Length: 499
Ligand SMILES: Cc1cc2nc3c(=O)[nH]c(=O)nc-3n(C[C@H](O)[C@H](O)[C@H](O)COP(=O)(O)OP(=O)(O)OC[C@H]3O[C@@H](n4cnc5c(N)ncnc54)[C@H](O)[C@@H]3O)c2cc1C
Image (cartoon, rainbow, N blue to C red; front, side):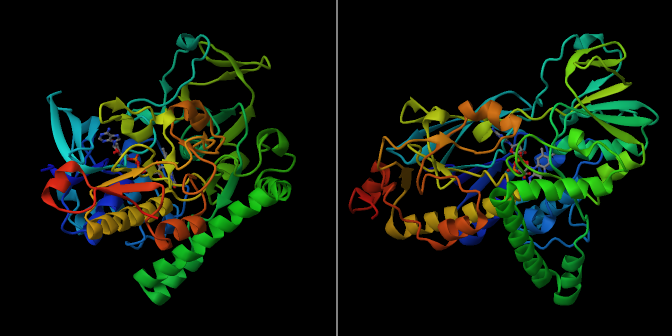
């Protein structure tokens, strides 16, 4: 008898969401959430740098089942954390979380339809094993122990602190200091205006520009709808409006990249001072949405630049010096503090090593099934959200699908679900068609996707609503069966490939 029916790894926004759907749809099933850290919230608890906030609106980043009531649609980590912890408390999920427990490995036995999961206690360093029928990995997509910092020439020469945003020192005093932020992604554009409030000056040093779009931090229409229709209905309508808006913008950018590029450039130029070199600093070499577009609430970054409190330099670092950095162009930038906003280290599936019936699973040899399971790996589901829209939109849909699959299996007495491609020679391609540096660096450690449904990892909410919410769960390429253990208990056919 397994310790629990479903073991959820990770108590971030995805793990708490998965627990909600599971207990709503399958209240008879037992589950536990194992969390490596000593607090819930994942990303929103880990990052402590000044200004940390979402770049999605919370009407789509929030859960479908819990209205976002704050008038700020783009919100700081403290509000997001309070929201998701409130969701956990309201539904009794917090009592199911076991903290300081890292899942390191999991071994599947087909005979017993059971995962034996190895867990390490942070306090004692001791190992424990738990068993479960399903393993649901909501471990996010990056390493928590350290962010990504490329090796810079002569880094040790710099006299001041060098800080990575993932390990922001609580006592770092940057008031009146010259801060150099290396990077041009979401973290850099969040940090720069926040630091510029008290720093002497902030320079954002980028190798390559990103697309940066001002977004209103408050959704005026959304707030009016909430006042008019009440929290629940107002939230539902705003959420729908924003989903359509996000998908339309993404599609238009894909279809008309030149026009989208021109439009973004014009918006940027309007927010910057006369004669500002927009094309030097805000003109990426790729098309809009080939990488995640950075949103800046109420144009705060542009305001800091226009106010002279921040500036952008586009160049490459030749080497660090005692006083700052020397650039390829020969220019020197002086700083008291250097912040390396250079990204994340991707980690797939919570870093858990999987073994199926004695065979170790190599993730790059697996193919993602419906963006939520892996070929050849039974009773394993994972939560990876959208990269072109709010993460949680996809996670909600795949949790619904996961629950429907459990219901289907229950009704027919199956205890094992194993995706297997009908065509073993199906061509495969990278899991994510997304140009961000941290994804590119990790592609060879990730599962792959196929060239046809259900082996595609879709980035389309409308497509996923159809696939994950509306279409039947049964599928010829999802083998459902009864284990020998279940067979002994129940009479009936040994296996079914559902047509
Ligand atoms: C600074 C920042 C801002 C972002 N802003 C947005 C945004 O505005 N919109 C958006 O859509 N996305 C955003 N993202 C992406 C964001 O990470 C996701 O949207 C979302 O928060 C991920 O939630 P999650 O629960 O899936 O993973 P995480 O938040 O990463 O949580 C995973 C949890 O699992 C735990 N865990 C991992 N492995 C194990 C293990 N082996 N054993 C036990 N526990 C484990 C971790 O400790 C962690 O608590 C942002 C990311 C960052 C870094």
